[in-house]
Image: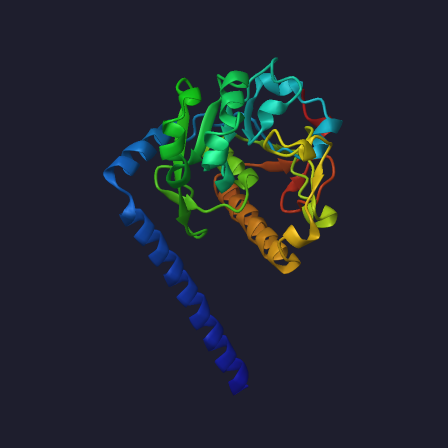
Length: 289
């Protein structure tokens, strides 16, 4: 009996310690924001509830999109990610927003030595770009291809126990899909439909496949000129680390579901298949088009 009581006390101490640590981290990051940062983040006031009560579509780049006709979304509020500009009918319609998060997208190799942002600006000139401020502001703000693109920045590093406020620090999301969903929630969209959220990487380890040909980022390397590319066994992240990364991503989704429920927002996963089981399923064919 005493052992069980002691265990409960220790568990409570651990829980409280974690909460204090999360709050401390949040306060440190908030206090580290400069006046310039706060001014940049203040622009996000425009995004809060801007689409309140309107349905929205968050579109990841999973291969399941190849099975769907999504062109009706041209008349809807949409949130896309990364290289969505490679969508076959991108010349017919522009997503409302697009998000980038991967640290690789802010390196010189991509910003200066590739056509990623040039393609983005030429193929989706009306789309608002959203990126993390500490990774992206310096490099994107100087990119001449983005001169006419409306860009918003967010600050990451906050605790999942805090509310979602784009004018302050928000959590450090483990995937750009979660980042896009957070943006849809912040905008007030309701309901929100998820498409292309396959999340089947652990079941197809070493294979990076999207709805378009080749890798997420185009290069001139000939080895990428095929449907998908495989990573060498020696180059793969250890499986347990992959599991931890996916667990963290799932916790992001659970956090976002809690925030959505608090705000009365419904989220439906309308991906054709896939492994994402956090959100209620809604058959894509039954969406009013």
